[in-house]
Length: 449
Image 1: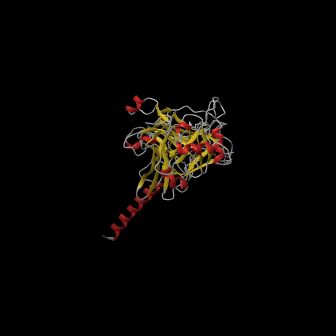
Image 2: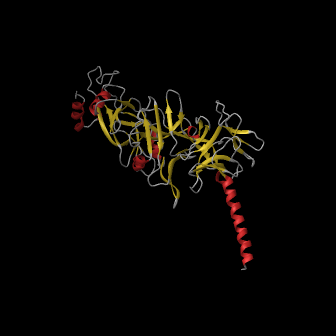
Image 3: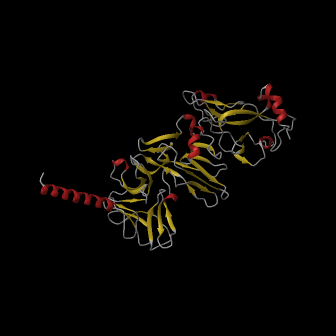
């Protein structure tokens, strides 16, 4: 190759690379202003390029376009937040910009507003940025006040920097809502969140009905899901008690993952996903998986037998199936009823008017504790026992490390056997239901001051 030919080819290569890098530079922006928008050929990046926001089509098999956010490095692309999930765009000349009123606006090719932040405080100095914790923020560039945040409007994913929350006073609730399908990010059937309970629990609901439940928060983990024990301690964090009736749940990066997050799937499965460069995204934990984990599978006072090959339920001791015919058909949802009525005949006395003997308690171990607990502030396990015994409405109690005293005054629902880490439920029974070996023990324990 001659010197002249080499110089021509080298010059062409330099020109090509210059234009390539110029295009790449122009296709990535770091803020949106009234004069700088995001088009389908561009993306908004966080300062350290951890997160990226732009236009996408679900699984690249749809004409519908959405504005979403994803981890920039992670492949395959997994969208973790969607702006216009109910209003897709079919125009190739759409743009995400800031309008004259200071709101973020997603415009189609005819300049019609498809989606907006819709804040009432108008600002002529708004700017939109993407933070390194995955928060898409509309901000007043002069005062520095945040006008709107994507973290206050989650979609189906919980990742570091986002929260699930409730506030009983204001009615504020932050929850995840599933996609309708893997190809359709519109609002699906399932919601995951933290309702106003003490201690808090995580739920997945199908519509308004519970679909799965974590069990109460025990300071370091949710006690109903021991399979996730190690991951909880480095993943989930629940903050409560800052103000009455307020609790927040978030997740941190798992120690063995580059990125991690929880996602509620279109089928109602809550998954803990981990991303590593060598493996991509993979599932570390998910629920419900077995039929036992589906909420209320065995009905009131029924316990799901975890290791049975198919969904199989048993009644707690002292209870019988409400309908033998339904149970023979494998329909367990009617649950069980008490075989022997309790001696408790009043609202507070544990001894009936006919001089019957007081009720006793049978310890049932290794359980996911039932739903609808009431938390009592007591000194110790003995006071927990006495408080339940003295209340005729109390059907059982449990004293749990890290939580304290939980009692139940309704039907015991959503229990199943756990492989390890289960809790002891002290079940209230008539003494005739307790064996001879337990009779004297329960009589004496009921008399402890």
